[in-house]
Length: 133
Image (cartoon, rainbow, N blue to C red; front, side, top):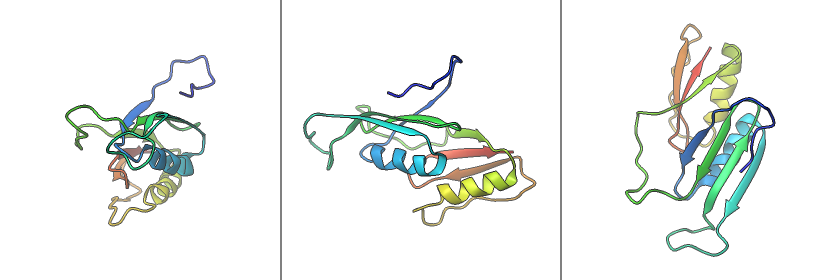
């Protein structure tokens, strides 16, 4: 896994993608820039179309996201109890980020009002984002 290049404690987000980790982290790299790294299985794994990602990391100036295709025994469950919080420099920065997160997502609804402090967005990978200004 890629580790940040600083001496501070850093918080990251871990997301289980269940089969599309490489696609998801590559998408987030197109949104945030940064460095990607993937560790995959050496051989095919039953139930996966591609070589599953054991662990993947995206480290950028704005976010650190770790992920995997491997799910818990009970499976991946979507929920509304967790979202990624990201502070945006200003409303223009937030609008640009929303455009990037909208890529390849049909019917993405983001109530984009400049007077709101927080806006919630769900991307094409069913990951929730709270974007603040």
